[in-house]
Image (tube, rainbow, N blue to C red; front, top):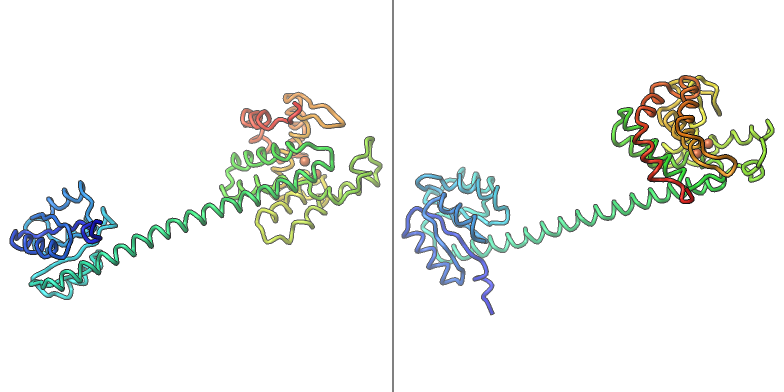
Amino acid sequence: MKNVRSMHKILIVDDEIVICNTFSRLLDYAGYESQTAQNGKDALQMLAHQDFSLMLSDINMQGMSGLELLSQVVEKYPDLAVLMISGVDDRDIAINCLEIGAYGYIIKPVQMNELVINVANALHRRELEIINKHYNQQLKELVAERTEELNLAREETIMTLGKAAEFRDNETAQHTIRMSHYCELLARQSGLPDSQCELIRLASPLHDIGKIGISDTILLKPGKLTPEEFAIMQQHPEIGYRILVDSKSDSLRLGASIAYTHHEKFDGCGYPRKLKGSAIPIEGRIAAISDVFDALTTDRVYKSAIEVNKAVEIMKEGRGSHFDPELLDIFLSNMDSILQIKEQCADHND
Ligand SMILES: [Fe+2]
Ligand SMILES: [Fe+2]
């Protein structure tokens, strides 16, 4: 079986060949494999082509100093243990070496025991640091994986809740998906920060969650609603808001805002609070445009889809009255991307 020590290759760097050879012999005697270099440049060459566990380097050398070599090596080879050796017992230099990243500082002349103990200690510390680094890396990957899982679960939960509400209203599940993409696109094109666009994408499927609280007789009534029934129907934004508003999650609270405001109109004639202009939060103004566009351009149980061109005309008529004019312009000027989403997320029976 191979000796554990001989698995570690040690590089000895000293401009005095006699010292290199002495150290090499001492290390060989202790069971380590070693190679020597007479200057920093050669040492760097050897490190670039071979795998060393430890470097023993003199401080005062011709050409590149030991400190310079140390700085380069800790940067390039973070897994290499480095012990510095000097003929001068200088506390400041020793501290400097340790600060740069050396594992230790040995004063010449070096006794065999002292050398072997320092080397063994440095190799042991190196091993622990490598194990620790791998452990941290694994931990980081695990946290990233779990976070991803949590995010997916959160997204799925929101989407499922949204679908549940839409199903009650004879809407298709794809409506919530398209609507969510339209909202995100419009948010991005309006220059909202990335994090807000992502939240809007996540939260917009919840816009009609309040329909859970509206009775089937009204929700599924085939004919026109009476004024009383319509008044009840108009409660769904507030019900949705109340379901979500106390959540600790940013996405659900944004969902509360979207649910509450997606039927407000820019001129103040919407419901439930008759908010006007910028008093309607931007997520509500974005959702209003996306929701109506999708309702117009897709089949519903009670009506057929209308042509996109016709839908655009209808929406233009609502510019400044129903819809925020600036947001509507942005939405309509991105029709290519909108139609791409419409096609990619088409209803399954299309
Ligand atoms: Fe609604
Ligand atoms: Fe909707």
